[in-house]
Amino acid sequence: MNELDTLLEEKERDLLRWRSRRGLVENDLYIENFFACYGNQLTRRHAIGLSALMDLADNDLMDLFLRRKELEGALDTPEVREVLQMVRKPV
Image 1 (cartoon, rainbow, N blue to C red):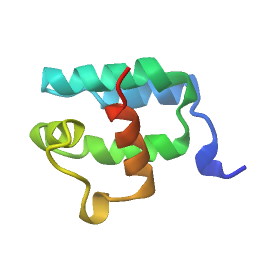
Image 2: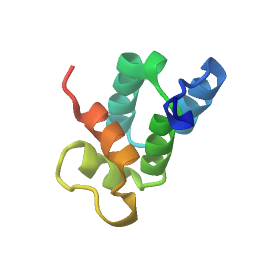
Image 3: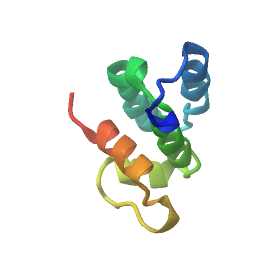
């Protein structure tokens, strides 16, 4: 098994969730839904993708969540694409 496919431990998930808090409430709603749906299944690969998304400004992140923009440049990686697809998936 690839190290990136290793499930996150509870402490790692909690830290990732805390780091993912946003100033824009709408982003928080998407992120909370993401953790509610996938929290126990998150891998190190997901953590890399989500961390990269969390480096974005709130408005840029919301544009990605709402499909007003797509990934480009250095942000367009398999890890980020996978997490973004998970976030966008309707519940």
